Picture 1 (cartoon, rainbow, N blue to C red):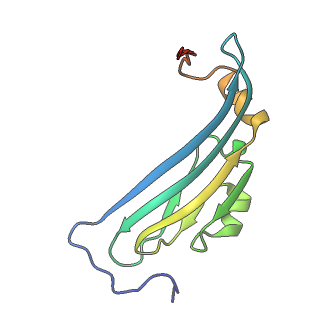
Picture 2 (picture 1 turned 45 degrees about the vertical axis):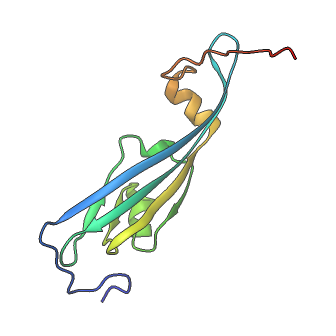
Length: 127
C-alpha cells in the first residue's frame, strides 16, 4: 500500500515526462571568466504510467549535488547510499527533486567559462 498512488491507475499509452529545470546565477569578469556561479535546479515529473511502476534515475555526476530536497516517494536511504533516485511515482505532476550546486563545485565543472558569450551593451539616451 503506497499512500501517494492508487493501485488501479490505467492509461492507454504509458508515458512519463521528466523536465530538468536549472537556474544559473553567475558573475562574469571583463575577460569572460566566471568569478562566481551557483546553480539551482529541480526535476519536475508528469507521470502517466499504469499500475505501480518502480523507477530509477541515475546521474552522470551525483557527487556535484550539494543540497537536495526529495519527494516523499523517493527511497531516501537508497539515495544516501548510492546517489540514485529510486521511487514509485505519484500519478500526474509533481516535483521529484530540487537541488543546489555550489559556486565552488560549479566553477570546477565549467572550468571557469560558461558555454555562451555575454556581450554587454550600454545605451545612453539624451533628453
